Length: 158
Image (cartoon, rainbow, N blue to C red; front, top):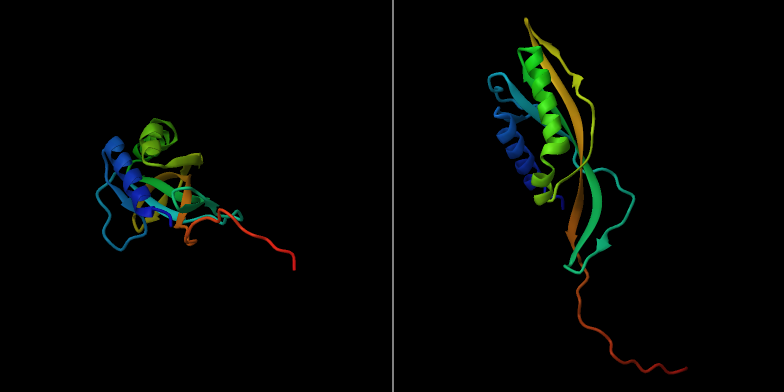
């Protein structure tokens, strides 16, 4: 199983500490915080992977997969939204490398910052964002029970 909670907590905590703004999960029914803030959505929990699980000596079978997030900086000021999205991208793409690695998270790829602006009834919300792909393992305990080894065998012709 993918440790989604560790991934989420690690990335959100790191971004929040670096940007010093609220980081929320997108598409919620709750009221969003005051501008500016960053939102994220996990758009692909686990990519299709036509490979197989590898068996490891620790008893855990692993298969590499990717997980895609969409990240957007939201503000009532276009320059602020662009600056925050760029800072978040820089942090994930370079600055956080050691922090994420220490928490077993690898950034596989990251897209360009693009406009995701929208009109909210009578006001404009500036939204700038990008997508990021994390490379990780889907891990499952090996179901094969180890019962010992055969040291000698007598093989007779029939």
